[in-house]
Image (cartoon, rainbow, N blue to C red):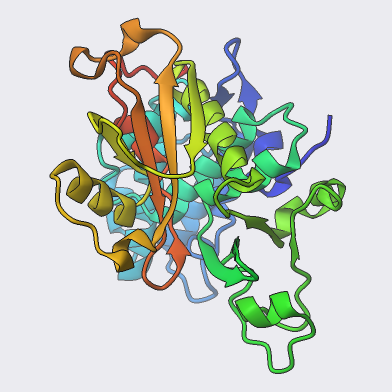
Length: 335
């Protein structure tokens, strides 16, 4: 089996009999390695003592007084967030269950970074055994912002963080189009170069073609199918549509904030202007294998999924909407 996304930390976790991820001390220690938590040279004794104690026993109870004793206010806030997140993980049997519960609680003050890291490792688990690089590349959209550009009639999405620099003398049309640094090595994933994905998966430096009717949106549909099955234990089929015409929009899920706003307007029968429609990246139809799991008001009807980009051409996908937004009569995470 080909390995990928080593940076997710999946090797540090155990698995239960159902395939869910079990928290280990090694996984918790990764959070202590973050620069926000490593005590600087001028850290107070209380902060150093707390850090050393958790490094030796990462499940050790931490009291409010332990954190209040830290002199630096920014450090106190960082420790409050990290300990609250750690405690949430430890209250649940698996990371999948912890994530689903966090999303249903609207995740409060949990830093987005922590949530994206959870999605990263859980999706890595959901994709375990997948040998299709297109599906795995599409799944990067679940936890990494994408920038979209039009090139020769195609809609190409590349990792926003990877292409964050500015090229002074671009060496290829793709580099010029996306504003990629000259020393970056970005390729659009194709059948011809898919084998190279595995060795570079942690660099997030392969772009994906999301043009309607092509493999990119179909791969994203497969990734979403695996996600729903893994998190909710519900079997679904998701297929991309080339257009949204003459559909009964009984239930829909926006896969990002902009898509939700567009879906709300469609559901209310409002006119959608060309500017808003041009931001739509994809429509999908979701059907349930077992209609009995569907809420009565949506039973017998497909669910429509909408993916959009911002006016700045960014895709910030919210996979939690697939956890909290589907019309399922029981919302139980794999645990």
